[in-house]
Length: 118
Length: 194
Image 1 (tube, rainbow over the protein chains, first blue to last red):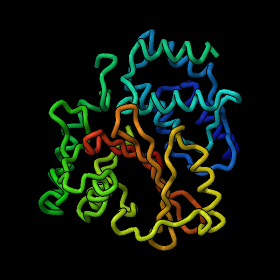
Image 2: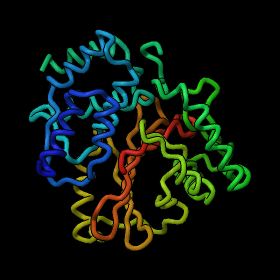
Image 3: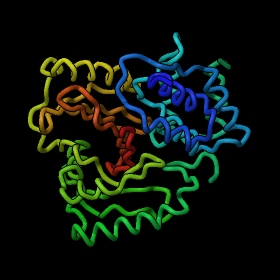
């Protein structure tokens, strides 16, 4: 498997949370930081799935914060075309509840509405 | 932990975190002597929710100098080198390569960067959160440069500083985020890379 393919798979594991959060974050933390191109794209659908899992109790607020912090500012993760600002705002607020608002059911539902279901 | 709880939310690691921190702080005090001059030594909060919190002399009363006070202490740097918590990316002090504002000298202009560093700077700016203030570029050791930009929080006075250190060839060597409360205290430092 090529290095780029391995890197892309690890990033997809994180944004889609295909594996456990701990495993996904650990894998991505082992990747280089620098990238001239976006290797994967965070979509509204990804966020929808994540927030639904939170609302079902499968993920905690701390899980969401850790996930967003791992995604935030990575050079190899882009955002769905046309929704870059919205998705960046979601990631920032989720990664920084101290600066925005605590992650709660209300927070999740408002973001689901803003993102329009992806 | 109930939903909606602020600060660093607890996960399973919080069960062993206070013990681990106690060991780290104990070892650091033994090796490096008394707590740094900038205020209280890094200690976990009573609840264990906050990994590191520092009190400061508020005489200077500016965000930059408040943060710089922590960066400039050699013992804090040594502490940082031994205190990385990989599972969460949180540490109790700044990475050792950080350029303290008080020792950084004159800020650089982006036009003064080498080609590799300029390319890196463009990527850094592109990926900053919306609302980021103009980045400050400072020169470090051996031709390295440091980019740092503050992103204000919703609560006035709070902010997150996104700081990246890039070597002379333009390769990122460190990226971390410092979250600062309205009173100037550091809520946490999260290592993004490596």
